[in-house]
Amino acid sequence: MHYFDTYALIQIAKGDKNYLPFTKASIVTTLLNLYELHYILSKEKNEQLAEKFFDRLLPFCVDFSSEDIKTASKFRLEHQKKSLSYVDALGYVISLRMGMPFLTGDEAFTNFPGVLFIK
Image 1 (tube, rainbow, N blue to C red):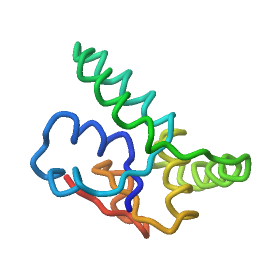
Image 2: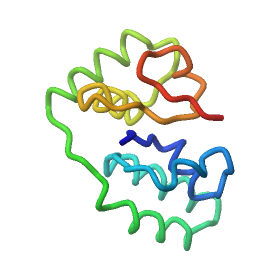
Image 3: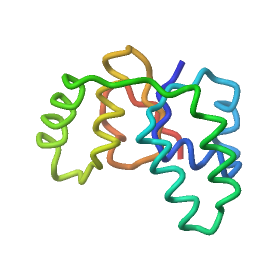
Image 4: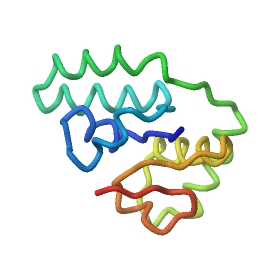
């Protein structure tokens, strides 16, 4: 199992060959990541792809707690020079709590523990 951040989800939706090995992996993400995915793909005029992947990934969303939000807030504040998004900080914290790798290609996460960085 891996926590898929929005970057990873977008790359999979677009068919990035570097993410091909992860298309069969057990996906964990949140509804907030799907929100970002849908927005970005729609902004790029890929509405049909946005709808397809939103619906396909919805069953893999996990809930998050108020404690996750507080921890993510502190994490984001501690690393504010990296310009982490709210959703990315929350996803990273959830991946740590759940004990799974955080799959991303976001440069801001290259040196964090528990990150599986694929570009």
